[in-house]
Image 1 (cartoon, rainbow, N blue to C red):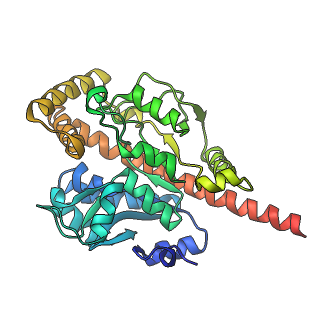
Image 2: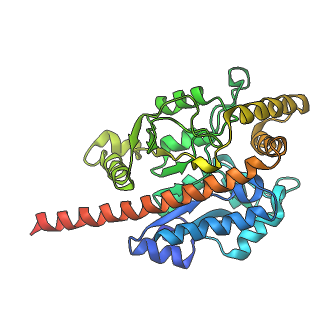
Image 3: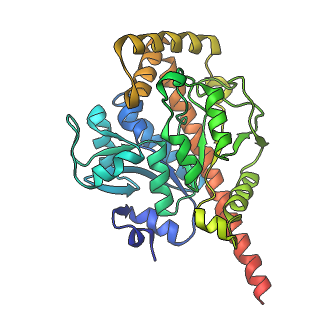
Amino acid sequence: MSAATLNPYLDLDPEVAAALAESRPVVALESTIISHGMPWPQNVATALAVQAEVRAVGAVPATIAVIDGRLKAGLTTDQIERLGRAGPRVVKASRRDLPFLLAGCVAPGTEPGLGATTVAATMIVAALAGIRVFATGGIGGVHRGAETSFDVSADLLELARSEVAVVCAGVKSILDIGLTLEVLETHGVPVIGYRTDRLPAFFTRDSGFGVDYRLDDAASIARVMRAQWSLGSGLASARAVGSQGGLLIANPIPVEFALPRGLIDAAISTALAEAAAQGVRGKLITPFLLDRVNALTGGDSLAANIQLVLNNARLAAALAVAYASTGASAETAAAGLAR
């Protein structure tokens, strides 16, 4: 039975559906980067370039969003442009927002039935579709000052729920990285450094914190993915839980595009003070801070953001290819044992 049959709200792009049916590699891509993460027209150009990078490595891209009240795994160029042009009028959709978009409830000032999926929502749709690998820029986490605001991204809880491997450039620099790692540890989400012992922080290659494990090739990460998601086999308690959760793969921004940590820290401090003065909070704070940091760095942070997303897409595609290969190897071994 197909993923689309299992969930009546989900539409698979024909290319994505064919790849999944044939156990070929597919990479999920988020859409908030299109509507809220970058300005027009760089947002659409970047989204299309990310898809091209995934294809170049041998995987099928599946950009995810809500279009006209339907969950979509795989967008057309026209649909991507629609999200890019609508910008802030698109609902920034996390787990809590999906039912309202699907039910046709319209928030004031937004396009009806149009939602750009955050990391959390993209993981949900990817898991529904049967897509195991997802590339993004950086994940959300515990915001600075969370001891009074209690502002913790739903991304972290979704990583504990959904069996999807998320490739990112680490935790966004605007967050409290230490507390974010504590929450991930509490929920059993492994943080893997790809060819690094240090957790990157989006624009910079070293946040000052370490990772749980360092792995230097996609094949090793793919074996860990398959092992983690096989742990529940035959265990009643694991079946009751229904999921072994996700994995976070931290992929540092390429050296030539990394920004000085001092520059970013200063820009973030200024942007945070401005956000507090203007009363910006909730789901609006991340796009506000990224926009202000870009302005304060003279556009350097946007250029770095584009490069790190492309870099993550390449690694995610390589990981999807390796994961598909481990599946083929497992099937071959099982067939040999059956003979």
